[in-house]
Amino acid sequence: MTTKRLQNKPQQATEPLKGIAIGQDWRVGADSFNIILYRRQVNKKTGKEYWRAHSYYATIANALVGLVNQGVRDTELADLKTVCDKIEQLHKDILKVCESNQNLVA
Image 1 (cartoon, rainbow, N blue to C red):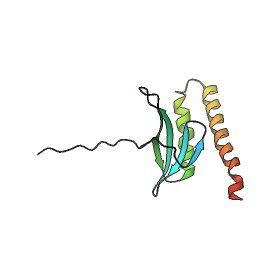
Image 2 (image 1 turned 90 degrees about the horizontal axis):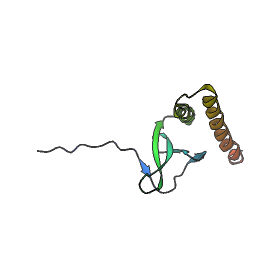
Image 3 (image 1 turned 60 degrees about the horizontal axis):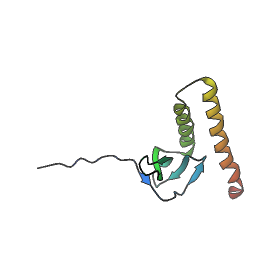
């Protein structure tokens, strides 16, 4: 008897995702259980762009904190200025989304 192993592959979406775009490379979406942080990826062989589920959160606030934390990790802590610049850029991207959607909430 053979057993088939299930691989836990991250979700990939080739069509445009619904959700909130934050900058060019990130998007916050949701399913019925989680807030999902997606990251834009490019297939190295084909050059085709797609979105991949990066991480899952219980709240949008936690997802945004996770986004900033990932941005810091992406800098590989090169130096303090690089880290601060990355945090500032991510905060600007988040605020831009909030300000552009403010009219929808009011």
